[in-house]
Length: 80
Image 1: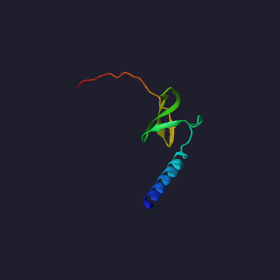
Image 2 (image 1 turned 60 degrees about the vertical axis):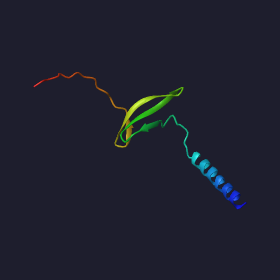
Image 3 (image 1 turned 180 degrees about the vertical axis):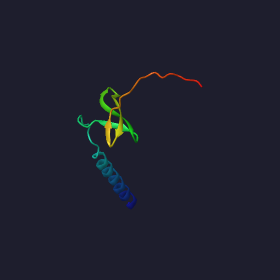
Image 4 (image 1 turned 90 degrees about the vertical axis):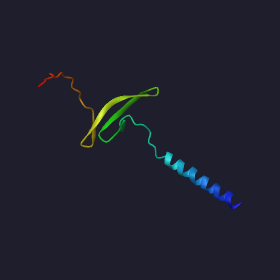
């Protein structure tokens, strides 16, 4: 009988721990968009279209996420 009581207490502790961990998740905030990131490159999610995230590529500069400007230029290929 003791094993059933112990198993019940362990299951209750796991349930309570799971509830407390889930309660720590923050809801999405439009003023502070989510950035999925590596160390210095990330993707800022601005909205969702169904299951597809829509956003912009960002880079970390001095602790802040900024959107980079891309340059498209042609280069002359030189052979020696």
